[in-house]
Length: 504
Image (cartoon, rainbow, N blue to C red; front, side, top):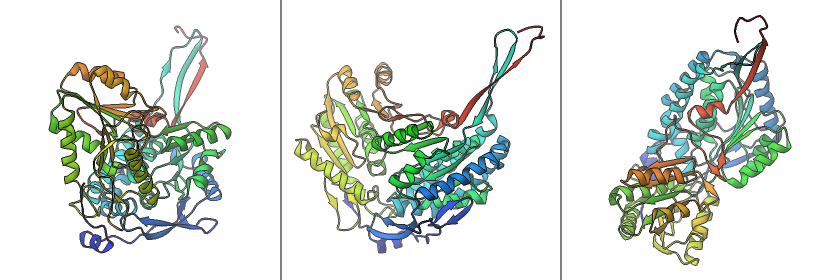
């Protein structure tokens, strides 16, 4: 099992000074306001299970107020009417402000979501600023095309912002997901209502504050904290929201689609669950393959949609890979995410913590071999040992269902054809990986697996220029890249008669 460092509040204070929580209300029409009901809910520190603060709880009435502000800002405000270069300049300023406040923002995601402070400072928060800058650069390059129509007609297309957008974001990457959604929508000229996950609302509120400082007009970016059953449902079914973008579970994605269809048939983009396979072939470098497999699953404590939770290893190197993975798990330090020596913090909340432990028990009952881990660590906090099961069968629950935690299923295969078939034997299709020195194998596997992104000899190699999304029950639509920008644009065709033109 991994080694452990205590996650107490006292020890955390010795690592870093945790800043006071500045923003806990809803952000609507450029102001922080209490919820209409006056209700609040707890923001909990997963290291200690103690309450950090209380946050205003928005519901349908608050969503309606935010949508009215966003609608007015879209229909009558300056944001969609600014030139792309002007919008880009403001987004650049927004990115600069994020970097100026990186220490405080990283601490918020660490204390609210159990994320490693060190990685928040070098990956998550800079990644948010990077996304803003990427789409700031694209904002003045949105254009349509000239159409060659039949005789007597001239045509062209316009790309126009889709309108008011509802963003519903998850708790595993609060900053990354916020800007994955918000950045292209802002660049396109949309206005929006953002519902952060109820587990991790704190950084989203800080970003709303910085957006106003950057010069984003009132009503363009609104943040409504709340629960999926109330605030999230209100966004999905609202008649004056023009599009919804959601990242989360497949179960909730179905509900959002149904609500969108039953209301105003608003388009939806869904990035949903995954049960991603990683195929390791006999010719792979053992150390490299074990490192890729381990980090592909245990990065961010396994709370990542693309986690390589199904690791298929060709039989010739199976035992060697299994041994290396166990060695890595035993050296993996679990503890306070503010401690720079720690590799894995606590799971994000109690529900997820208990769900992961229940899946571990399923694995034991179904006959998988527990190589290492499998237990809760300590007496306080949602800490779980890095867990590896071997001899996993494809029909076991731990091989079929998304666990979203530090639990790996290790399986053996003989041929490439068998591996491809088993990799595709899932309802999901978010991501996959292949480790091999054979280019033909890499090409065949990457073209054969039905998933939205395939990594060859690497894993979780994200880039803002690389579209990201799923096949099958992992959803549809793409985040990142220019494909994401186009999701927030409508195409309008304009046709004019030209009866006296000398040519057509």
